[in-house]
Amino acid sequence: MSLPVSEEKPIELYVNDRKFATFMCTPEYLKELALGHLFTKGIISDMFDINIMNACDELNTITVTLNKDIPEDQFDVSNVITSGCGSGGQIQEDIENNSIDSNLSVYDSLFRNFFVDMYNRSIKYLKTGGIHSAAIADSKELLLVREDVGRHNAVDKVIGASLIKRYDPSSCIVITTGRLSSDMVLKALGAGFPIVATRSIPTNLALEIAQKTNITLIGRGHRASDKIIYTGHERVK
Amino acid sequence: MSLPVSEEKPIELYVNDRKFATFMCTPEYLKELALGHLFTKGIISDMFDINIMNACDELNTITVTLNKDIPEDQFDVSNVITSGCGSGGQIQEDIENNSIDSNLSVYDSLFRNFFVDMYNRSIKYLKTGGIHSAAIADSKELLLVREDVGRHNAVDKVIGASLIKRYDPSSCIVITTGRLSSDMVLKALGAGFPIVATRSIPTNLALEIAQKTNITLIGRGHRASDKIIYTGHERVK
Image (cartoon, rainbow over the protein chains, first blue to last red):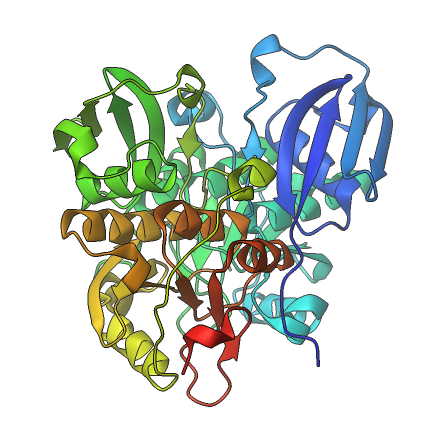
């Protein structure tokens, strides 16, 4: 009998031949993870910014060569993204002059379906528990699901995948099993997603950021009757 | 009606007049948080290393003056501990020549009680959900409980509190609601706790570190019948 554990491995991300970050992550969908991370941090604005990208699970590295230089202060050797960690900090700077402009609206009744569907497609969670899931939905259905031992990594992976598939963020919803702390909402803001739904709840700081930047936050989204729409009610019909 | 949210606030930690870290945390028990963080990172080895310590919730700062200098490389302006983040990295260095020496043993049947007791004393969780709890137990009973939006912060708080109360780490157990990723186990190792129990499960990397450093890891600890003892079975009788 094998004991239930989640997979966690340190993966180094190199950008333009320099170490950019270390993910403590579940080592799958590594390109999506790196893309989502760079996109939510505003390092890349689309796939055209990528020249070459390689992910090698055996060498535990992802290497990205961009078609442009990136600011020196974005490199930081201590930039370790542990299994539960986002990029944090600089909140004021991130939300100033940054707001979501989107007319997306979604039927209230669909949210529970999104969560049920995500649960059923969370292979690792169903096998072992102890891992986070994230998904992207449009106004009708769930489009893709990814899992990672870190809630931020799982969200980075679905955002990276949606970048590859050329989904329009302004028409999509980020679904997550994780608590919505400030860094989770900043991630959605950086990538341009108007709605974030969790089966958990947000923090007061996450809520404040969502209000200021016009993001719809939904908590307890898996519940049919007592889902909570915290902000941006106009997007739920 | 007030909506359920968790409290999250950026709190700056200054050590010897220099910025050491930023916690994205639930702003209570701030001294314990700082102490636990510095202790698990090996910056302080006991309370005698502390000269003066102040925590000001209004100014969002904790200031610590030590009776000694600390290595330059421990200061890092980007050292932001987000609500889900530990200190990560340098795993090999941390576990080399570092192993837990303790004869603590605990009755198998007690673990469920610890979790039930922790749950009943998790005031914020009972009110809103969406927050982590941690606790310290000895071989008989739960000694204290703390809550934080970050699973690492909650563990830092109970470890800091146990330092203030002069509990002997080698006779105590860390109980947590959070997943046991590598950084969580490194935290217990740094502070000298021989047993870590979670209601969730560990990662493969956390398990590997526990095996190498002689830490007992227990998963699904809240369950009476199918608790999982991953490592260090000899400490459970």
